[in-house]
Length: 264
Image 1 (cartoon, rainbow, N blue to C red):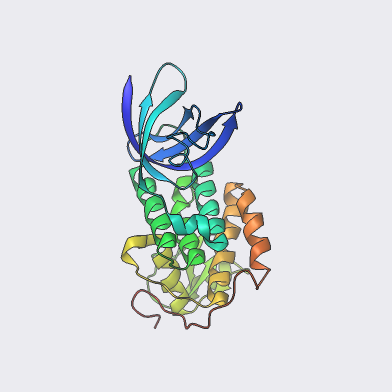
Image 2: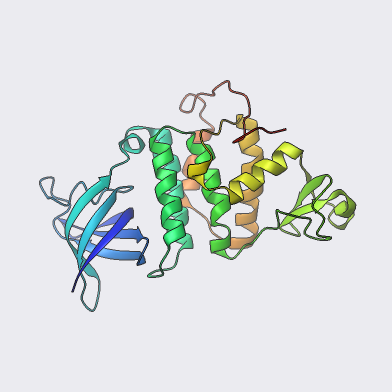
C-alpha cells in the first residue's frame, strides 16, 4: 500500500552501509519511522530530502512492518538552520523535545504546525532561543502538565500581583503567596510574557525581541517544570547549555525587551 505523507524529519539513523531509518512527524499520521534505502549515497534521490529538519512530501510503501520511502520531494529545506550553529542547536533541541514527548502513530496536527512554524521562524532568522521557549511552554500539555496561568491556581482570582509556584504548577495571586514559601515573584510584564509563550501561536507573534536576562529567567521556570514533573532529559539541552556559556559563539545583542504589543 502506497501512502503520500507530508512530514518533517525529526531524526535519522544509519542502517547498514547505505540506508537510513527516518523518523517523521506528520499532521495526519503523527510520528512514524520509515526506511530510506540508499539514502546515504551522495547521488541518491533521497539523500537531501531525508536530512534532519527537512519538510517534505514522502511516498511511503507500507507493509506489515516499517514502511519504505519510495520517493520524496522537498517542501522547505530551512537552509539557514543548517548553516548557522546557533540555529542548528535550538532546532535540534526543539525536534528532540517533540520526538521525546509525542507518541508514535497518533495524529498530531497542532504539534506538526508548531514544529513547522518554529523551524520556519528560526529559518527566517527570528531569535531561536525565544522560539525554543515558545515550544517548551506549548509542549507542556503534551507531557501531561497543564500549568494554571490564566488565574490564581488557589483562589481563582484573575487580578492582583502574581508569582509562580512550582508546588501549584502555576500562578498564585498576592492573596495566596503564603501557601508556598518558594514562590518566584513576577512583574506584570513577566506574567504577560509567560502567558504569551504558552497561549499565542508562534506565527501570530512577530519578531519578539527580549533581553538575555529575561529569556534566562523564563527559561529557568519552564526547565524546572520539565525537570521536576516530566522526567524528560534531552541530550541537545546539555549541548545548548555549553554553547550558551561561550559568548563568542552567541554574541549578545543590545536590544530592549518587547512583547508582541508591549510589556507594560
